[in-house]
Image 1 (tube, rainbow, N blue to C red):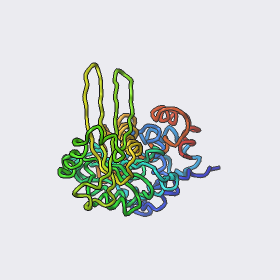
Image 2 (spheres, rainbow, N blue to C red; image 1 turned 90 degrees about the vertical axis):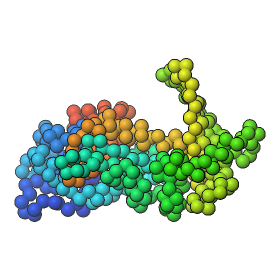
Image 3 (cartoon, rainbow, N blue to C red; image 1 turned 135 degrees about the horizontal axis):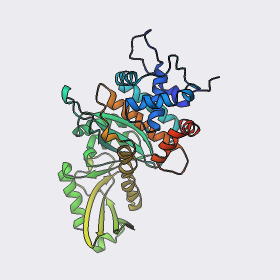
Image 4 (cartoon, rainbow, N blue to C red; image 1 turned 45 degrees about the horizontal axis):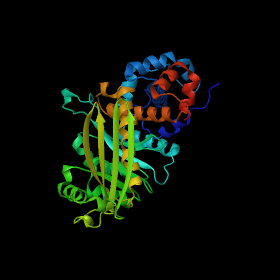
Length: 372
């Protein structure tokens, strides 16, 4: 007697099978669920998915049809490579929206990552670049959009924002996304923003730098400025981060930026191996003039790098993946994001890597991860 399929399966029912109707030996939903289970358990390619499937066939058959046994790696490759990547992502988003409740004040960092080995020299295809949104509190991927070049983040970010429910949330983006249209879109969708500043906004950066560089001690201690400080020690390193915010009302280009209320600077003073260094990073924000809120947003932004991109590289071996044909690189990236979210939602206190290994060894644990 078969048990019920995991809830996640219902969100992929809208996927159209890319194969010729009537000549399919294996069900599309079986292929998708096996692939998800395999990536959760550490598979990073088509052959590994097949090996996983054959090893787990008896268990998988308790909730999948598998009318002609286990698909081979060529079947996984052909089918997943030909899936419509836009619809596949919509299925992912449907599932994410069913499991994630984004609350007011949630910080949503947006950042990009290049899949380094997804290029295809033979066809002249460059490596794809995925721009992802991350829920800092939930520690889950909310969505992603593919670009062909890193420079296209500017066009990808608005498309990604359209997919997200950001009302009441704080969207953080590095300097690449510091654009007037992006700021306006965030405000129009009911969110707030904290945007990094670099040379791409030269006159604005210069104006913000001037405000802070010309402020004296008395000014910094006045009511117009707010201040918050954090200190970290460990592994021979001592770092003090000072956060300053002030009203943006005096900026000459204020009217060009929808919702702009404050400007901020983070002064990082680091001592490591008796060497001292100081770095200043500047930001614009639609939040109120409170340095502690500013600090929370800036610090939360690094979560997408440390908890998502680093995990994808080190645990899921994303940068080593040579999957290149068709829509396979983008679709396999979505499989990794699904696996990352499922493993994160499983409440056992262990690393993602340890959970992967346990899922590969223990069917009950894997079933519990899928139920997440």
